[in-house]
Image (cartoon, rainbow, N blue to C red; front, side):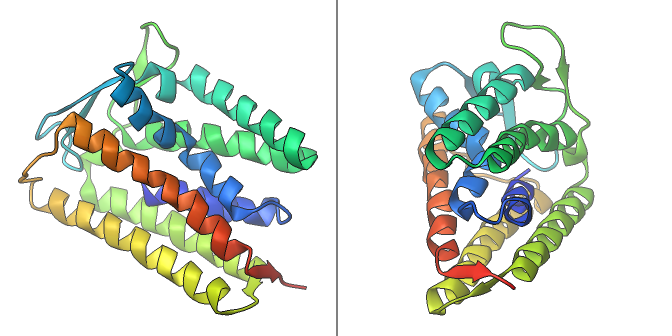
Length: 223
């Protein structure tokens, strides 16, 4: 799941209109923001396994601290408490916590059974939507279109940054996703990155909430 997580961020703006889209976007992305750091620290493992699923060649060997259900709930609670401490918006804090946990739910939908419930072993789950490239694209695209529609229905741009910053963000995200889909449709032929390259590239995902918060500051609620 990729653009589906971004969709959650856009949709949360409708539920928490006083909260920056930067924070709302960081919530559903949080587990993937932590994951590359944990890879670099050696706490979690991934390997390249062409054919692991039709959609991605990644085999998520171990990621209990970033992607187990228990830790997703813990990270969500921590983020929600931190946000409440800073902003004193109780309802928004709950939505942010839910947004973090939504990441696990969407990954459970897409991954094969490699999603841990708790750290330290035990059952792993996953419904395996990635076994079908068309179904994966259809679900993610539908989520993003619906969420952006909600965002646009609830906000309007105050200046060019609010307009072009948003559309630039969407074009960038969709272009990245399209490249992944193209690779998957062609059998993920490679060349394949190293684990260090995967983690280093993953750190760039911190750009997304910063970018979202930037253009959202130049938009306002529709009356």
